[in-house]
Length: 232
Image (tube, helix red, strand yellow):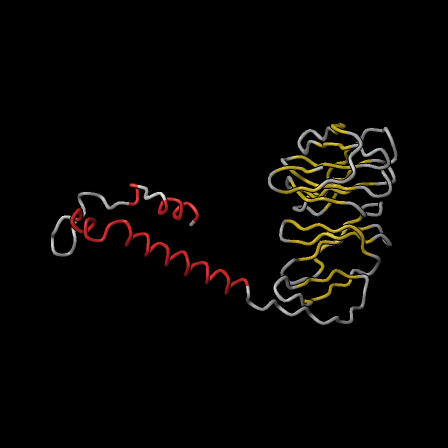
């Protein structure tokens, strides 16, 4: 619309009708242009701009969806929330304290720190379909590259869980430069697993194919994946 407005104000020749165009009575379009000229086109386009602007204002003034009322939950669970209304769709209890959460492969993955397991919840039915023993509290995880990646705080490693067999299929050693405990961040972006450690803020990249881990940056505070990139 802005480009059209600029063309109208500048009387851009590109807005003229082609010389080969004829009206319904077979007269050359050039005669139509001489009779009505660019002012008629400008008036029509301006009316269109005003109408679209009015529609945009009306859209902006639509009443917001009222916030959902608080509901009572049983706790130690994963809750599905409707993004349109903010209402709770359902609650899935996991039988212990939840920690770590990721979504992928049509499932919701959540850790149970009490029995040190990883639970797979069907995103459609919201039912637990598998429980995977890890031997560590799964508090930090990421999904990508065909696997679920879980940080093992006890041994400074990352566990790879295959969603096809629902089991740990590989263990990746991390650089032994500091303890991977506390506020650790994990993400999957551009085909790699990324970990931000504490306290020195190491940014570590894991190749899912070779399982090689490399320190690529320091003094990183936090990370996030999106827009085909990793942001740090």
